[in-house]
Image 1 (cartoon, one colour):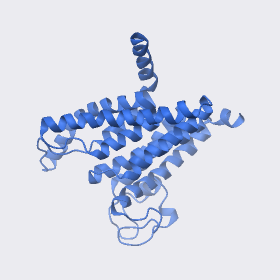
Image 2 (tube, rainbow, N blue to C red):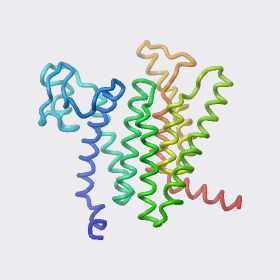
Image 3 (tube, helix red, strand yellow):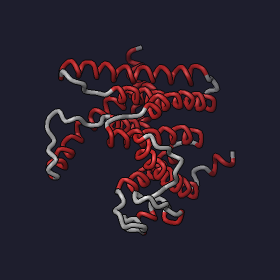
Image 4 (cartoon, rainbow, N blue to C red):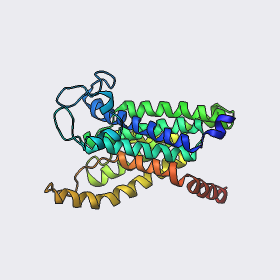
Length: 278
């Protein structure tokens, strides 16, 4: 009980920020290595020139700033994605910490990590590995059982069954949207990796979160087309109609938006609709 009372002390906020930044550095490593089938453990952090990066030059966020975005060993420019993912993860973890108890933070922090890695890989390769989707769905079911134990004590229905139902519903809705869009456009519109990612999202945040993620992600994707078109054309990399875009990051953004900002209002809206229909 004392720990739970101390959980939202500002000191914990600084620790959570540093934890998020450190994990963000690890997530960036995962984004770079997983598509290449390279171990995410060995070898340790090293520069593109092959030299190992010492601990004091591998401190999340601060090292990038102190080195002014350049490698100490060879002077190569460090990709902005390093500090971006570190800052993004740190901020998301702090926002999650503010809204959750330790058990929710453990489960949903794992969920945020999976979304960050899956989105980064999807941006880079237009593919989402099964370890992030199928593996994530399994973790989502286990996490739901874990949280159900602390909230209701009913492992089966409020944990595994509810999570499995949301996983199947979320992926099924997106699959049918994909089939319909393919019939209209006469080509693949949504990759199967996105469908599996939707199952992972549903397993973690439930039916309402899954539905919001699909339609929220679609809206965000439509909005993002315009700045992406402008950026591509500014760089003389012409973006034509029908140019494929990664959809996974927008589904992930919809899921994060639901979890951190809109969960209460969306759940209340769904509850009112269910009352009207009953």
